Image (cartoon, rainbow over all chains, first blue to last red; front, side, top):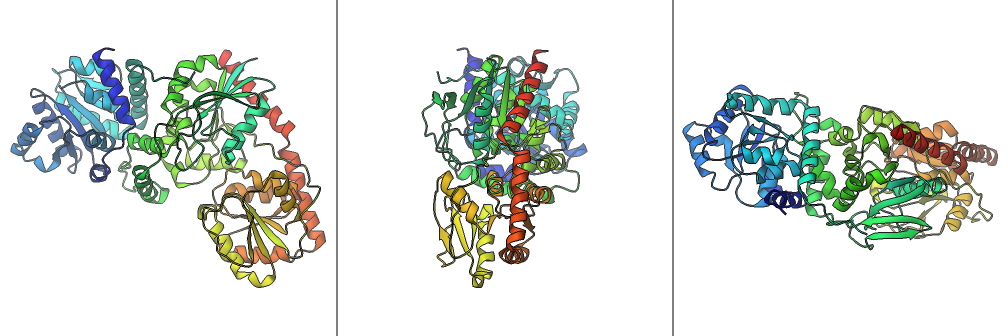
Length: 191
Length: 397
């Protein structure tokens, strides 16, 4: 089994694990909620995008950063005066799942494939900036912008569109489900 | 013979449940014409969805039943979600400011998955093997077996039997979204179809219903004291608490309340309550045939086999008028009365208790005629076969 298939199987297991209910209650609101993953290079783009969301779309929006060691991103948020809206999710799978269940979208700005596969497995729409790992994981199941585009504004607008467009969300969920099924090895069926 | 599948959350001789009985009846009625396979879970208990039966294929009355293991039991996590759903998702709790629901679709999926029975093996089977079936019939909108399973089969070859009733869970938008494309639908009653139009926003499909046993009992129960009869799960959710309260208020009229089925509520000890536990079909029909009335206080019914069986035994029926389906049965048949609330229930019990023999005979005959006209096995089988052949024909064409 290749690495992606192995990650997809782990994401499939996440689907059948309970989320952290206390965190889910805290994060599940009618305000805009972003789950997010970024690497060092993507962090400014993510924070610019989220800032655009706060400024133009929803002043009560929240950003839940999935990456372990996301403290740097939170510190950068602090310097922009938006740290009250930003939270580190932590390493635990049940916390990660709570964030994905509460979120309108997973926003990826660099980083690995694992969170993308988790989002597809759980049924959370994925958007963000293209990179090889993200594209490899998401296939046609995500709305990704090229790194050269004015990505921050586009990402904020895409999350808003996802919030408003149920048929689009449904299409992405169906593609995400199909994507995970194709990548992961099928579970055993009774003879 | 052409191979078809029927998907249902539970399938075993020991299972008591309306939609399970419906799925099995459809399997039986279709098995003369098609090579039918039932796809189901290994669960028996509809609360825990515990993995109890062996997985794999077993024959039940000559029909193969392929069971897939349930992955986990329902637990506190789901009950927490359920509690929140009851407060946040019902129509009266809908946001009025245009803001989206706090329940994203991923969370709605989560709610359905952890309600159980969660059988990913069934989903995988349908994804990989649906080409082996000319049509796949899914029974009951509520459970993961249908909700996730139906997404694995092309919509043009699915037949969907929602058994929908107006309950809070039905308002989760994900259900309406998931089933919108699956337009080959079988409704049990016109009232169920109207409920779908109201809650989900679509109602295409045909009303077929279910065959109801109509042989008249040879030995109606004979008792000195008149009695009202209830058969089924004894639970507050089925309206049994209201029924007991109503009976308390007419206790001085000499009526007994006879109940059969599992008591999940804890019936009070009263001289006017007689609890019989499980009874076999023959005994049930004897009790029905001898009753002053059959009472169905449940608000959430999509068909109610047991009420129609009682009608076939010529017994007047009293049903909860807040359930559209039950009210429609009464209004179309003239087989009894419906009530709205406790006071009206007490009044209607009083009315039934004073029916003269002519009125009783007229009401009883109307109920039997209604059942024979609409729910005879031959009629249901013919319409069902026609539906399945239409879907297979369209899928092949």
